[in-house]
Image (cartoon, rainbow, N blue to C red; front, side):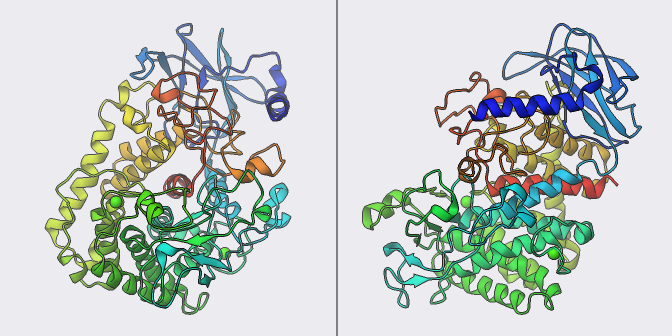
Amino acid sequence: MKLFLHVAVSLAAFGLYFSPVRAQQHSDAIRLNQIGFYPAAPKVAVVVSDEADAFEVKEAKTGKTVLKGKLGNVRTSQHSGKHTRLADFSGLRKPGSYVIEIAGLGRSARFNIGKQVHRDVAKAALKGFYYQRASIDLPEKYAGKWARLAGHPDNKVLVHASAVSDGRPENTLIASTRGWYDAGDYNKYIVNSGITMGTLLSLYEDYPLYFEDFNTNIPESDNGVPDLLDEVVWNLRWMLTMQDPVDGGVYHKLTNPRFDGMIMPVAAKNPRYVVQKGTAATLDLVAVMAQASRIFKNFNNKFPGLADSCTTAAVKGWQWAEKHAAVMYNQDAMNKQFDPDVVTGAYGDRSVKDEWIWAACEMYASTGKPEYIKDIDLELQQPMAPPTWSQVKTLGYYTLLRSAEKLKLPAEQSGLLRKSVLNYSDQLLVDLEKQPYNTVMGKIAKDYAWGSSSVAANQGIALLKAHRLTKDQKYINAALGNLDYLLGRNATGYCFLTGSGSKRVMHPHQRLSIADGIVDPIPGLLSGGPNPGQQDKCAGYPNKFADESFTDNECSYASNEIAINWNAPFVYLAAALEASMK
Ligand SMILES: [Ca+2]
Ligand SMILES: [Ca+2]
């Protein structure tokens, strides 16, 4: 039923977009950013066909040809062996709406050329967090047709047997309201909140002016605070409640014992627990609170006492971690020892060295006290990698680079940091001109890890840092290329942000979108993207090729779930490019 409706809706949109030449076939063989391009930026479409040689760009409304070109040399995908050729129309700079047409293949999706062309997707992706809010009604005024009642009030959460302390025996009731649902499920995990918050707070610190008028139509839109920060505060206040006031340790997660069914939040009534404290969760909270404290001290009149609360939480968490330097969260071991068993997302980590680095860098940047990094091996000689939820040291490096001047960082240290980001970015750029989609994303099969869309976005963030350090345009062009990837120039042809693009993700693995009875999924959510692991064993994957291992299917938690730690780098990439490409 849902599939049928999807087709009907798509055809309606198709008819509107392509009214002058309705008979023309809409070709899935022409892949491009389905949103658009900046006037001065590179503009590339990828043609997956051996049958074509030339292309034309036409005005969408009139059908008038505005540019003709030859396709580039044949490139071969290292993942599928398929052939691609580039249609480079960078010479077209005039703002407007266009399509690409190729004789024998048909027409591309319609796209725009214009300033601020990605502002709407940046806003949509930040608004995606609003839709993930727990413990609050989402009225139609802000949520449109996705309006819903509050669920998971989390005002009576049980302390799990694994998490007891002197002041909080088993089954103590605590309030731990607010926060964002983590992903397709309704639980709230500190570890994944860590990287998400770090990414969003860094976006604010890197581009504060851009967010002065970046309104996402949320209840806090008229409060004189950037909506990016208002959204962050919704989760920050939840995170503060996850620290045991008795000893400063932080609960790993707030969760049901088992996942809720495919139901709306208001229908979810299962008991919720905070479970075992751990070093990863505590240090992630320390890092977030330290960073938040230096940002929100500038908003003391809007959020009285918040910055101080963050500072206190960071210091107390740091002290707990000093006494518990490597308490790992091992869900299986915990379940053997305690009841009830908890089988939701584990977010278990093998090493907390990187959590120590990140927390130390944030504490140093906020306090100016070098003793926080004195005894920490910052591992600056090792190759840099973009952050993931379990490997967060790069978030610390980004903060040190940003604060280098203020901290009077030794030249040797800032030199190593700079080299680290540039080496990583330069290595991404090697052989870019040979890549089947002309993107740094996907050069190696490893890029298509679970949540590969976040790999593309985090590579883009690193490239933006390299651009900041050097002002070299090649880095920003490559970052744009990864945004193009996420918005359609990829081996699946999908635009991975829900609610955007012409070939849309319609069936994300997300309880809210599945249970609400509305055809369109909640907008502004980044689908995980190709993952050849195919762990969900869903029917519908086209093949086993790394770059095509994606299925727009509700069952596909391995390729089509959504998650806050994937949305955050998308918001960063799209908004930072908007801020940079004026
Ligand atoms: Ca606001
Ligand atoms: Ca780790």
